[in-house]
Amino acid sequence: MRQETAEKELFETMPVPKAVAALAVPTIISQVVTMIYNLADTFFIGQIGNPYMVAAVSLVSPWFNLLTALSNLLWSEGHARPASIGMMFGGILNVVLDPVLIFGFHLDVAGAAIATAFSNAASVVFFVIVYMRLGNRSAVSLLPKNFTFRFTWPIFSVGLASALATALGNASNMVMVHLASGYGDIPVAAYGIVKRIDQFPLNVSMGLCQGFMPLVGYNYSAKNYKRMRAVSFGMYMHTWRKLK
Image 1 (spheres, rainbow, N blue to C red):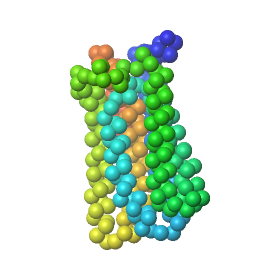
Image 2 (cartoon, rainbow, N blue to C red):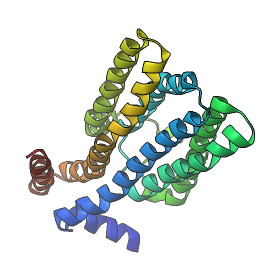
Image 3 (tube, one colour):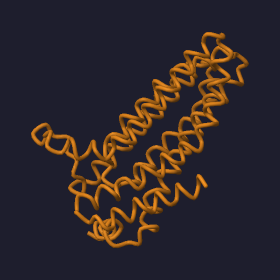
Image 4 (cartoon, rainbow, N blue to C red):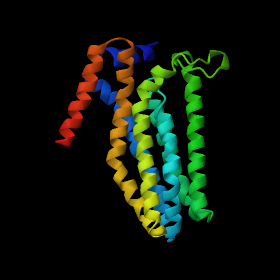
């Protein structure tokens, strides 16, 4: 009950800057951690000294990242902290497993793939445990009898913008990788490395957007349009100052 009261205060009465920070900081951290473990894959594979393996990672990465676009489509109900912890847990585990499997077991690029798959599977297990602990405090049900399309559009309308942004960004990466492949495998490897570094400001922005979307969605559903506009206007002014 105490946690439910705190969440209600966060979405309804807490000052907008503080509420946005409470939701956005964990998602920004999780996005940065995700970027770091993507860099870790490239870093450890680069230590092998084979640019073709780095090129292979660069080719696969945009397809793998399309899963992020799918996840952005679903609304996380405002549980930003456990979602971020799960992503960070998977990222840290990936960073630990990379050198063990790549160098310890001499699996090379296959070791990086196994580390990524295992760390993501571990994150899924973490989220299942969190979901089970939330119990009735979650509006999401996995029981077939509760399945309905009634709330599909309201949910998708919240996450659609973020999902499209991620999907189009990955589509752009695919086009660039395809163009770079015309010059050989080494340019593909070089592009993959540069693109991961270039992703840093984008990942921070994505984390910020993922953090404030539940706040906007909640107040829109509650017809508290004044607070919803205050959140949206605050985000607009923050972005404008950054661009200026």
